[in-house]
Amino acid sequence: ARTDSNAVSYSDTQIQNGKKYYYHIAAYKGNLKSDYSDEISLIGIVVGISDKNGIPRDYVISQNYQNPFNPATTIIYGLPYESRVKIEVYNSIGQLVDVVVNDIKSPGYYKINWNAARLASGIYIYRVSAVSTDGRNKFVNTKRMVLVK
Image (cartoon, rainbow, N blue to C red; front, top):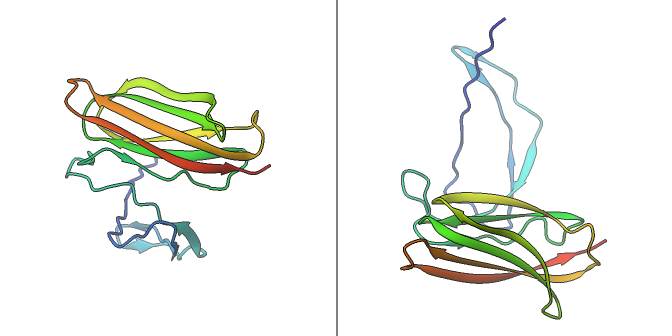
């Protein structure tokens, strides 16, 4: 048997960070339509404004989610140019506890899942620094996250 599937995406231009949204989903194939799903809820995360190819217009770093978290969390970042990217995590007294990313990345959005199972509960800071490979564009930003065990 052969199965064909077509992925369809939905973009909501009115999403607000941290706000909860509710959806029902149905599948369509030709004139056939499935029943709607049970209600699902999603928390809005705005990552940035993109061009028509999905490339961010500026460097972007999202607040990690879930936050507080245990033991893993997700960080989304966007690059408008090919860049050397470094994401470092520091504890509340400024000690480096992990280097999550240290690589050259192409333009686009990236999602990193970070696991802090080996660390104690507390407040951590993640620092994202990026420099375009031509050296003309630089970005540095920090965000706070809370690990609760």
